[in-house]
Every structure is written in C-alpha cells, then in structure tokens.
Image (cartoon, rainbow, N blue to C red; front, top):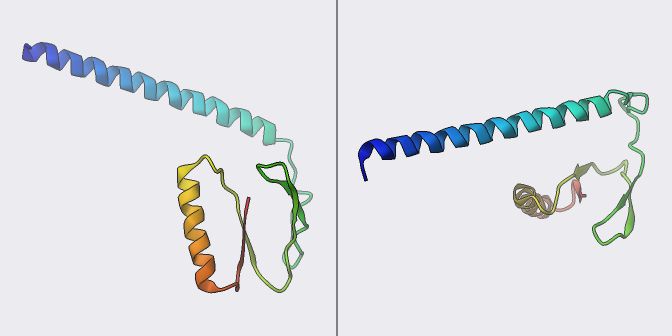
Length: 112
C-alpha cells in the first residue's frame, strides 16, 4: 500500500474518533444540564446539623426485598452506594469487604 494512502486513512480514523468523542461529550453535557435542572428545586431543609442522627433509610434490593438501614449511635456507619453492573464499583466493593474484615467491626459498612 502506498504510504500516502495509509497516512490519509490514519487521519480519517483520528477524525472519526475525534467526532465521536466530541459527540459523547456534548451528550454528557446535556445530561448534566438536565440533572442540574431536575435538582434545582431541591432544598437543604432536611439537611442534618452537627450532632443530629441520620434517619433510617428504606431500600429495595435487586431481588425486590425491602430493607431498612438504621444508623447506630455507638458505631460509625459507612454507606457505600454502588452499581453491580459497574466493574470499578465491584472492585471497590471487594476492597471495602476486605477492609471491613480487617478492622473487625469497629466501623459498619453497608452497601447499596
């Protein structure tokens, strides 16, 4: 193959990748903007102040089972929010599980 043609193919490929990347960034910008609009009406009226207890959190797991997460005054609780379809989240969840075993219950970890 002629070197000039290969160079043109490389340029075209880089151009396509650039346009694809730009399109994804624009799409993400619109999604972020939409989230900001959705969250604009949220207030901090229910925000906690120093010394207040966190209220119980009602959740539903992937199997549809309801559960209530209650925070104990005597033991710190870390609420770890993750997605089971996220490889990075699952890797971190494994690290959190390992860390939790190492500290032997001094901090409670709850994953949702």
